[in-house]
Amino acid sequence: MKIPIKKLAADGPVMKVVIDSVDLSLYIAFAVIDGQECLITDSKGGTIKTRNLLEMKKQLEGLSIAELTLRQRSAYDEMVGQPKWGCDNAMEVGISPELYPTPSWQH
Image 1 (cartoon, rainbow, N blue to C red):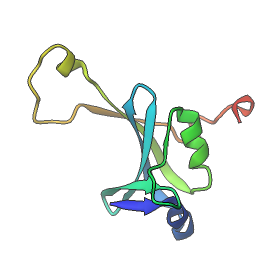
Image 2 (cartoon, rainbow, N blue to C red):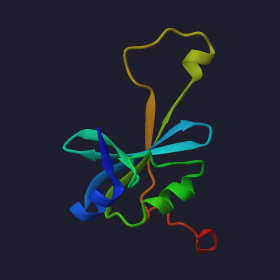
Image 3 (cartoon, helix red, strand yellow):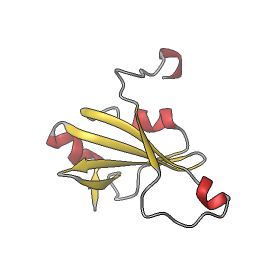
Image 4 (cartoon, helix red, strand yellow):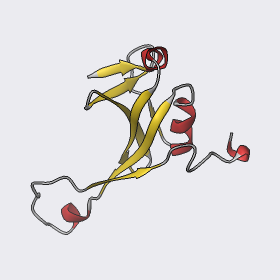
């Protein structure tokens, strides 16, 4: 499911946004709405993706977000030839602006 960033901004506070670290330096944002992750898109329907975490935080600046997290999956099992496990090895870390504000020199 997809949701435009303008609709998110207009609908009011977003309970949770997850920035998914897809590759070494590729980030994609998801809004969690009613327990379901929705891909955040731009006004043309394209995925909002950045090559820099600070740039992603800047793109989401206009939203009122209660909880902002970064999700990272480990490729370790795959790299050492382990079979796929039945569980997800994703790690989520809180990166809310209150906890980790963007330094003024990086704006």
